[in-house]
Image: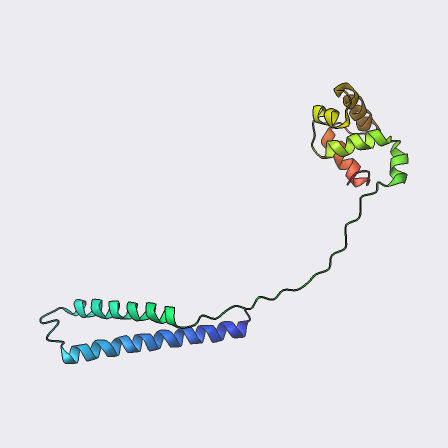
Length: 160
C-alpha cells in the first residue's frame, strides 16, 4: 500500500468509528428518553448498555456478511531466467591440479556428502579404491579434510 492509500484508509476507519459511536450514543439517548418501560422497568444503565452492545454486535455481523468485500488485485509479472546449462569443469584448473576423471567424479560425490561406502556402491568399486582416490584428491588439492577439498574444488570450478 502506498502512503496516500494508508492515509485514506485511516481516515475512513476513523470516520466509520465516529459514525458508529454517534449512532450508539443516539440510541442510548433515545432509550433513556423513552425509558423503555415495558421491557426494562427499573433496570440499571448497565442493562441498557448490554442491550445496545448486543444490538450493535448483531448489526455489525449482519453488515459484515451482507456488504461486499473488496478483492485485492494480484499482479503477476513474468520474469525470464536463463536456462541453466550443464556444469563444465575448468579444464585448465583440472590440468593444473592433475586430477583424473575418476578423482573428479569422487570429489563430486564427496561434495554430495556421500560416505565412502555410498560412493563405492554407486561407482561399483571397493571402499579401499574410494579411499585411495579420496586421499589422492586431498593431496592434490592440498586439503586436510573432505570439506576443505570440496570448498577448494568449488572455488577452482572443478565441481558445481
